[in-house]
Image 1 (cartoon, rainbow, N blue to C red):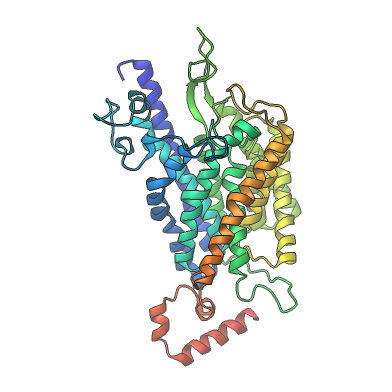
Image 2: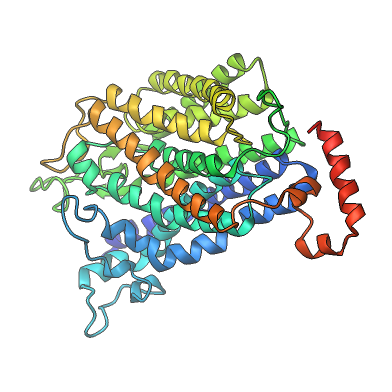
Length: 472
């Protein structure tokens, strides 16, 4: 980097993503606190460690193949083209480690342009996407608390965190993804790419996993199993809000010459700007307005529709942001507020309707808050942004209701619900999905060894006491 301005731009971009990763880490801290607060005392350690171990498992698998998928699968593959070479994203690449930007090694498939661009940004950009992976897995984690085997959840976390979600990011959250090119798909802050897929995935797991013991009465009506510690739940959600702001920032490229040769290619002109994930110009002011207004719309609407229920008020704020996220780079702030309010109301109403109608036990409303609100957000953006360009590149389809609706179906069902259903059925068939009934009754914090050490009559007594206390 022998040019001061070039060096400043590169180092600023490197630092920018490094800071967003720090903020996004708070999302996972928030999920851990939130889920422990929502679970009952006898399941605390299990709930905490189930979510904590997402960090190493998804990190390692994302390093080995998840990052490569993002760049290699933009054409499907074999939907509009073949696999795309991404030598800078393979785990054996010299750019997947410490690198100062010098010439590639002799005989390397990397080019000088690869090393110049990726040397400093690769690790922090990888980490930003990795934190999105953790988020997708953690959304599923909350829905299935108190009954899933840790090993089963970790397998499912790797499936969504390092495989299915990064495929949908490659398709619909990359400047050259086939869904952007052919459908005009627009999802700037991941209503679908993170939230709809995770909500659909959680629903697929829940259909096979079944409800917690005692959740439904004999007549099929649901019992309300309240969070044991609403204060932890609210603190966890506040941390998720904070991390979500960092998430928004990470969805932008901080500084690009949009008239440069790599983009609009307007000779003799320069226009430096932040851009969204599709490389369209936007500003951090725009997303600040819209993040806070959609959060506010969701909080107010959820407070009203839930009669001031604290759990749903806070969850509604999250649903509000998720519902507006698909178009929050282009919405007016009042649009963002109203769309956010609609997302919160939809999540609340759908959660209880699905629970009663289909006997789905979603312990924290994750399918509703993330899945239904995310699906809604994509569809609404298709209408509200109808006719806007989906990309600064020529030949790409414009944003449309049908393009975004088809994209929502792909996110929620094709890459979310169905893979989860298939993997869960396989795990269930192998006896690996759900904790045994007697351990679930006593509490998941008891391990198999200590259970075997207990006298049989003590186990039976503990089960009777638990059944009496829960009314099961």
